[in-house]
Amino acid sequence: MMRGNPLLLKEFRQRMRTRRAPLVIMSYFISMALLTFLLLYENVQGQLTLLLPARGEQVFVTLGLLQMAVVVFLTPAFAAGAVSGERERRTLSVLLTTPLSPFTILMGKVLSSSALLLLLVIVTLPLYSLVFLFGAAVPQELLGVFGFQLVTVVLVAAMSVCWSTLALRSGWSTVLSYATVTWMVVITGLFGYGLQYAATRFPIDYFLLNWGEILLRLNPLWIEAGLAGAVPGNFGQDMFWFLGFYGVITVILWIFSVGRLRPQAYAFSSRLRRGDEKDFE
Amino acid sequence: MVQTQNLTKKYGRTVAVNRLNLTVRQGSVFGLIGENGAGKTTTLSMLATLTVPSFGRAFVNGFEVCKHPHDVRMSIGYMPDSFGVYDDLTVTEYLYFYAECYGVKGALAKRRSADLLEWVDLQDQRGTYVNALSRGMQQRLELARCLMHDPQVLILDEPASGLDPRSRIELRRVLRRLRELGKTMIISSHILNELSEVSDEIGMMRGGELSAVAAVEALKDQIGAYRRLWVQATAKPELWQTVLAAEPQVLDYTLRLQGVELVFSGVLEEQAELLKRLIQAGIPVIHFGEQPTDIESLFLRLTERGRVTHDAR
Image (tube, one colour):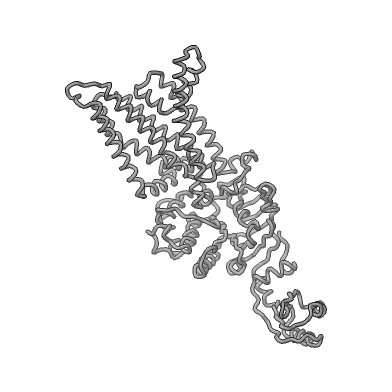
């Protein structure tokens, strides 16, 4: 991948060379380690003689959800300035006169900005192995939770990079990226859970239950909780809905982003290439 | 090598470039001069495939910019008017990155970067971080970056802007060497003297249009044929106008508080005759002398009067 994408190699060099990268990883790992030990101490102490997997499961779910929330909210911080930052640093015009395709540019930005987050997720694997020791999860659940976290990070990074390409300023792209993440985590969670709660009080109102389910299917924390076995439901189907919905949004944003980077790509449509391309360069 | 046909760019109601017809021959250096907002950057931006023309066509190295942008990008080295550099990359890494973007890899990239760094006199800065270089050094590094894939055409937008006099001299030296290498170049600037030292032809842009094109050699010849004279004398404007209008060799004049500045096309003897006639007309001449003519004022004057230059092609 890196051999075929010089931008990715360059971004890795730049990002990993700063003090920020090891500092973020170290701080995150220490925080997660402290939290894991605290949760284990509170929930599974004394289990050397009497094993209670349900309590270990609580630790696993809490850690998984917390990690998902943290990485999802951290991703825009690394991705929202990916392209608009190039424009602000006045390096974009030169990059655009190279023969790199818009796909290569966008993919390089997505992977490089999500790399640190993926690293954050991976460094916590040893902590999960501790939880694993107490019978809190089966390997399939662990793989499902981790895989879903990695996919969600890449998805959020892709949407943030697209916002960064479409918005002229990093400030705006950050606002749009965080609005997206807020929708994904907070709005769908609050409304989805709220509607479901209302449905339990008014069981005849099918509308509430249906919309509650639809909204929760779009919430990464809900899917994650399902994958960890904390809530009942068909999470294979829910994950399909989640990936399908945000996948379609990402593809739409991606198409517009390509037009933004290379107006010639849609030369057949003057409407698409119209606008403030002068400002963009 | 570079050709535009009625190239036009509109932003809403604003016409940034209007029906530009330009031809730059292979191996020649074309200087584009004009004030800020004249349309120079937009023109170069269209040639560099960054901006899509609203109308008309442009060809670079035989490829049309809208239909074959990839081929155009492979053919050009573009340096924008204001550029930034990547932080946390060394000079060599910076060049390698752009080389890889153009598919120049391995030993070839290594050899080319070493040659180019020596060429732009940055061989001692190989391991230095790019953002730690001075502006002049960054400018030269940008030129090296433009050449990493050995393009046929160089598009340089205000390459000397923001440079101190020493760095400008260094840059001119590099540009002259590029010219000797036979690279086709389009260079924009708002300082004509700067362009005249490296260009074969100069085109002036005004309000998005190419108002005049002149060969630098022809301009330099004209410098010998035209003289700028300064006549210090206090006389009424009407008297000046009457006397100077009758002089066919006075091409242009500007009345000042303490005299008149004029462009004279005659030889030294005719210059003496002019002085004689001024005195005979009752103008109390205090000083009568020649002033050095620079290419900039000559170009401006001649393009205004439509002499020596020919229309934009």
